[in-house]
Image (cartoon, rainbow, N blue to C red; front, side):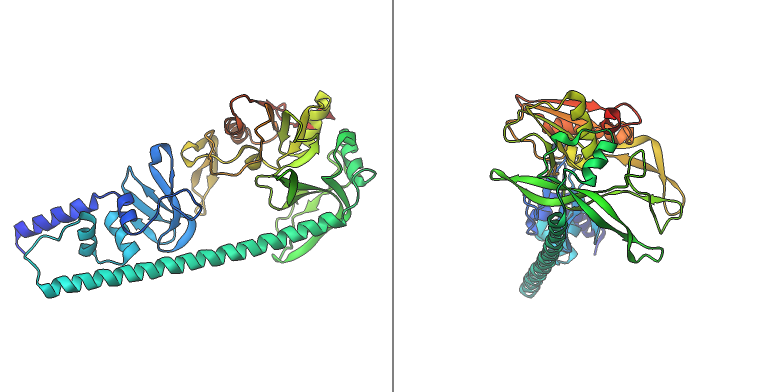
Length: 418
């Protein structure tokens, strides 16, 4: 090939390489949409796209960046528009360039046999790509089926625990809240119960599943609104030890880390998009008070006298209370660092203040005109304050005020009330 011809071919390839990766994705049969299985626009002006990989599936392992004009898959790598079209169709390099540019490659005219062979390769490539897409779709269907099975099994276990639990009033669960300095008299007993002896499962020193503790526990259901009623989706469990002030919860040793203790609260099933109703009726309330924990919300309600027009509820954690953040809004923690496996210092990234509309959070119905979000003063302050600002932005609407109320530093409203 002569120097002029090489330069012409280089220019042809460079022009194909400059084609948008998004255009290459669509020409390869990819779909831009909003459904869970689609590649979705993300970030300001749709600068990035995230979703399942057209070659190896997954949920969000694949991304395209308009600004950098590249794609990446955490499972099978990345590259430019030419590489993406090749991955999706199985076409060879110059065939991919021809399709992207809509014209033949430079060089002498090709014979009818060459053109027929090129057409055959393209048809074969398209067939291989279709097969890959179908295989990826089948893997995703299988994954979804297995996930649905495990979710159903976990929910059945939650319902079994809930069905076996006894009434809240007169139980150790009620006495636990009284011992914490809280007034449980206003609690709706439809959503809180007590299990006299509940097993705490964890890992023993050899990593095997083992019963680490057994004792009384307060249990509460996470529910989501559904056509005028609540549907149970998960379970919150708090183990109790009335002989262990000041929090009256047992010390459960971590068998895998000597000297460490395990959390005495666990959640099972799902909490996403649900709440634990505590006091009041959501259907008639115009004001809503929500925090992470049961004790926090009851402590705040006790402090203000449990307003009769307010629905008090717990969300379980900050993620469900405030929702997730956009990836673009995350920021480096100003002080914290972590060590990687080589012992090197790495930044700690914090979810930012910009809400991700695709994330799931507790429901706040449209008739709520005043929302109070409670922040714990004993949580990590940087992440907590960013989350609370994000929650306020997420839940704000026309005609609704959203207030963030933080507990004093080093404590929470459950302790303040006591």
